[in-house]
Image 1: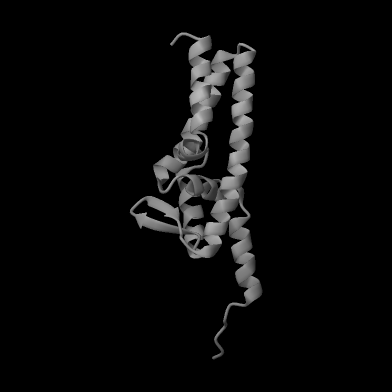
Image 2: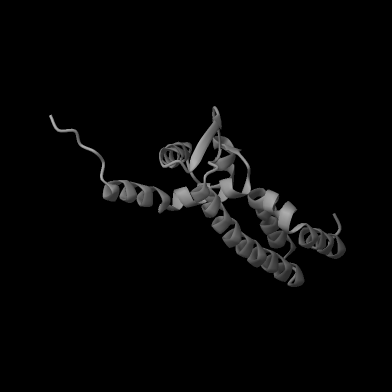
Length: 152
């Protein structure tokens, strides 16, 4: 009986098909920002179901991108590929944050306080670790803008 070995072509297809899904990209982006997240935290930060998250995490573990820290807690793996992937997601997310901060400031200038506050809360929910390390001065300035224009 001849054993069947997986070919490089099928392995790379599996790898590409797993990384190419929007669900995988959402989870990788969040795990690039947060050192570790539970399934529940991933649900809170996305619109994904628990089943989608579990299936995607299982697939990401199978290609060595994600590792299970303990029951229900996951992080990105620490290999050279994943580190490069993380750097790319951090760079892209930094641009997203810049655009969101600009949008919040525009809403404040236009008197759209509630929309600005909602957008600010989502920004913190999704990106807080990155905000603390790369945007602390901007976030302080933004908080002052809220306080100066509105009474809390």
